Image 1 (cartoon, rainbow, N blue to C red):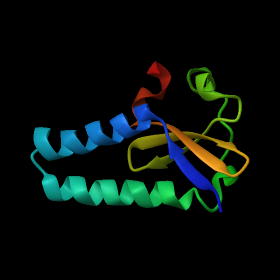
Image 2 (cartoon, rainbow, N blue to C red):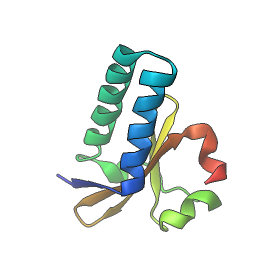
Image 3 (spheres, rainbow, N blue to C red):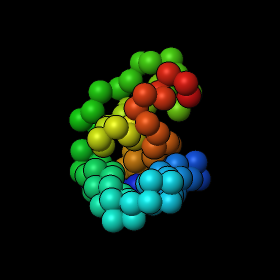
Length: 100
């Protein structure tokens, strides 16, 4: 089993996503359901984070040479692994990957 650790930016990304769904779109139940699904996908990384392909996209290499990503719906979860640690760097719309 791997441990999960989040950057402050990843926490901010999650908070902003939840707030956008809840307050901008005025859909609090959808926000709760979406965030629950997102957390489930992230928690699945405790078991097999290295099964996902290492990313070589230039915009992602700022997070390290072993950067990986997994998607939940239209969001990209960007992370690296170090020994028994999964380090979650960002949670951003997949369409924004090139702009990071």
